[in-house]
Image (cartoon, rainbow, N blue to C red; front, side, top):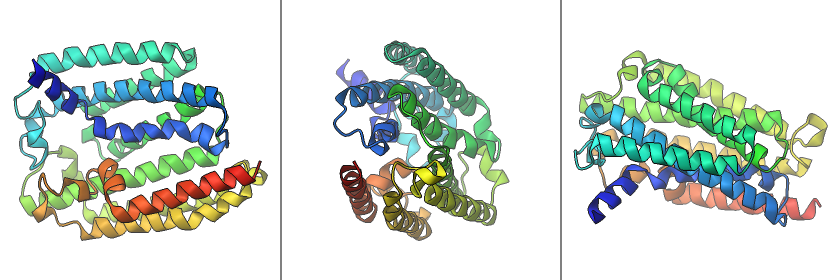
Length: 304
């Protein structure tokens, strides 16, 4: 019984809950550091997304179990390896969905709607859209965008359109990098875990990446310009641009150095295929995020 509990926890992918930290962006960029009620509401939103995202991961692993068996790392997942039954995973997924909606109900009705939209989009992605080129990238990015919007709704704070565009575009960049890593893995290992990879090429993904990154830099800069452009609370946020740009360039450097022939369970944290791990396990990106966060806190403190 204990082993089954550990397996279901592993299948829920708690390491990917870091994505849900995005719901805290609303009180953070509103500089509401001492407003504990807002942070508690955001915490509820965070927990709701943790449960609903884990439910989606279980559904996705059930759908992808056969394809994951061909993957050098995913084949060790509880469902793909056969250690956890599909039936048990789906039952637990339903339980997590119910818990997520109960938490969402304690926030407000609109938040319940966003959780439902997230569940619908990600479920359709798992069943169908992950095999549709370009739409698969949009579905991945939409998950991050909905997290940001939900954070604003939970805290009852308005988010700038420029900020939401930045979140969407940066998320799209991460999705493109994920597909590039998978394509490199396919080219070197002569295997294919995703049908959609047949429709992509490294050249096409590189062109998409260039367009997305240019757009992301522009929208983040417009948001950083402050209230004059319906952006951040203060134009001092322009000072954060160097850290954002350096972080993106660092991520691209790691992506270019990614050697798929040496990709295994040991170096999984260095793969652009797993951005949620790479962002926190790479020392360079970790320091960039830390200094960016500290700068935001300093700007927020002195701008009041």
